[in-house]
Length: 502
Ligand SMILES: [Zn+2]
Picture 1 (cartoon, protein in one colour):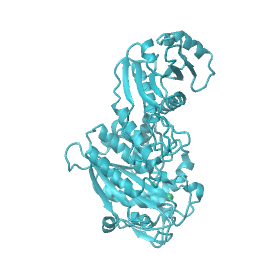
Picture 2 (tube, helix red, strand yellow; picture 1 turned 120 degrees about the vertical axis):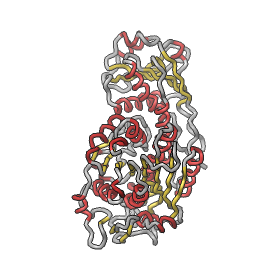
Picture 3 (cartoon, helix red, strand yellow; picture 1 turned 135 degrees about the vertical axis):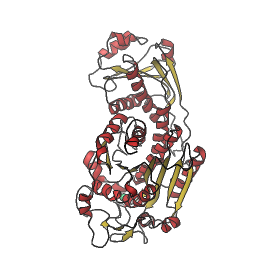
Picture 4 (cartoon, helix red, strand yellow; picture 1 turned 90 degrees about the vertical axis):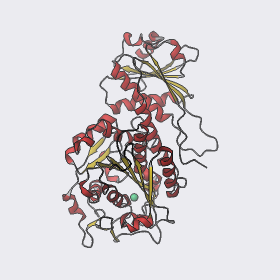
C-alpha cells in the first residue's frame, strides 16, 4: 500500500562555477538554458558549441516555448532546451518559463539536468537559475502512485552551471520540500489519507522534526464548545475527525506564536446533505489542500530553522452525508459563543475553520494566515491563476499583492467587513452561514471567518482558487499546485507583515 509520507528527496544538486566548458556540459543529459531576449554572439560564445547553438536559435519561430531544442555533438548527445527571458521578467514569468523548459526536457529520458543562464548580470543569473531549480525540484518529485509498475523517475541530479558565485539553495530546497509535501498530501487518494492517517502522519512528522504535537479529539472539541467544526464532523462514519496543533519553537518553548498557519483539511467533501453532483465531487479529495499548504509552509519554516515561533492548525474532517449529517436550518454555536444558522452544508469549510480560528487566535499570535479551497465564486472572480486574499487589516492590501508578485504566487485582495454581514442577517441565529442567493460568496465566506478571529489578531485569509489548475501553474506542472508555500515564506522573509503590527 502507498506510504502516506513521501520518500526523502534523492536528487543531488551540484554547482560548477565560472566558465561553462565542454566537460561540464557533457556531464548532463539535458541542459536548460535561459537566454536574454535577443541573445547575440557574445552570449553564445560563453557556451560550448556556441556558434552551432546560435545558428539553431536564428531559425527558431518567434514566440515559441521552448525557443529551440537541439542535441549537442558530444558523447552524451546532451539535449539543449532553451528559452528567452528579459532581465526584468516577473517572478511568475520566470517560474512559468522554467516549468515549460523542464517539462520539455524531461519528457524524454530521465537523467542529469544542467541549468545555465548566460548573458545576464550576476544577480539576475542567480535569480533565473534559482527559478529553474525550483521547477526542476518540483518536476523531479515523485507524486503518489499506486501503479503495479512504477513510472521511472525523471531527474537524477541537477547541476548549476556558469554561476560566478555559489548559489545558496537552502531556501529553494526548503520551499520545494514544503510545496512537494503539500502537493503529495493533496493528491493522495482519500482512502489512503483518511482522517486517522492524516492525524498519524502529522504526529510522525512532529516526532521527526521535533515539533510539539497536540490533537484535539471530538470529545475535547465538544468541551471547548466547537460546535461549528463538530457540525461538519458529525456526519462522518467514525470518530476520526479532529483539530491538530503543531508547534515549532526555535527558542523558548512557551513563546507566543509570531505566526499561526491555519488550514482547511476536508479530506473528502461530498457536499454533505446538500450533495454535490458527480463532476463537482470528483476531485474533492483535494479539499484538504489548505491544510496541506499550511503544513508544507510550516515544514519549510522548520527546515530553514527560522528564528520565529510558529503554530500550525489543521482542521481535519470529512464532509459526508448520512442520518447524522448536519442540514440546512440547523443552528449551531461556535467556540466563541456566536450562533450560526446553517444554509448550505457544502459551505463546510468556513464551519470547520471558524472554531479553528477561535482556538488559534486565543493564543495571541502576531499574525494568522489561513488557507482554504473555500469558494467557487473566488475562482469565477479571478480564475485559477490567482488566489483571493482577504484581511482584517485592509491597509495591507498593497503589501499582500506585492508579496504575491515577489514570490510568483500571485494573489488579489477583496474587501470584507460589516456591510457584507448585512447579507448574512438571520432571524434565529447571530448570522447565516452563507447568503442564500447573493453573489460574492468568497467575500461572504471571508467576512464570516473574520467573526471568529478573536482579540483583533492580525489575520490574512487565502482562498486557494489557484490550488488546482490543469497543466499546473508557475513552476509546478501538476494539477494540484501547492499554491501558498512560496507566498508564505515570502510574507515572512521578504514582506513587512510581521514587523507591521508589532
Ligand atoms: Zn464543500
